[in-house]
Length: 398
Image 1 (cartoon, rainbow, N blue to C red):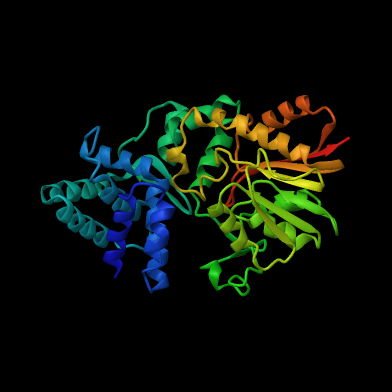
Image 2: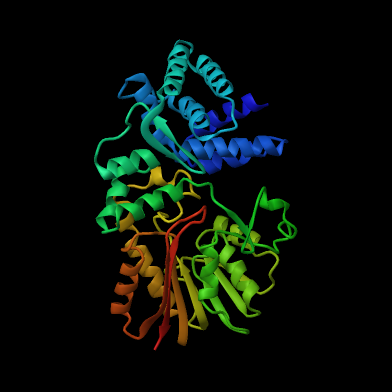
């Protein structure tokens, strides 16, 4: 069964689109929870570390480019060889060679040579960091002297993103810590408590009585300071975790808004255990609502740079211009949220981004447009220890 799991991992990596979309239905076909766990580990690990794995393959082969059809096979095998201590090396190599033979028979010797070559690179003075393991000494250096290049290759992050973070004036040590944290498998928390294994097995999960949230994300709803009997709006509610959290914190009415029926269904599923949630389909920039809310949460779409560990392929999908393109949407959602508050109401703006222009920059621009508001509390967190980062700011009408 283990061999077929490796083949399934390669197949998922070859599937266009988000790896989560291909992984979820494939994982459900495996009856053994150990196989499901291995498949998840291989897919996410090969995705997170792909830049490092490709650099290893190129160093071993002496080639600057490798056939794209072979890269998923090599990535899955190299991830096992380099980043998993309990997987026998011969099993990873043999299965990769067989997978290559099925895909392109003439390529099998090349795949075998690359994998054996990487094994021969071990034992040198150049240290490759590995999450939860001792660094791996290599005989070949995979990067040059440039700090951004080193962090990019060693921790498998797009170089432009590393340079952007350094360009914010952040120290190399801080950027390295962020990159390292992004490669730690995320900690799953249910109702604020870390759990091991499948959270679906936790008592109350199937009934919707407990919430699966990142630890940082779980701090957003309490920042809104919900009070008994209040009417509260969650303006960008899907998938519904924060709406459910708000509903658990107060007996007041929670109105959850999102723009499509598909996203509304996600919210409905997350909030099915709470009778005080009303769900509305509508554009958050122009919601079909009146200013009757004591508090509004605007957890806006963003670059996701604070949760790259949880969203395995997000780092490879993000492009240099994408961050600025989101600013008008973020501003429009903040303005809409402000327009729906009662006098004296509270507003929390939050993102799962590290970018100052998506965070403090949007708050500063909002306060210039809305001088009747003031920021009363601001929280920022870098990813660390398997927990994502994020930003949240509470604003209040004066």
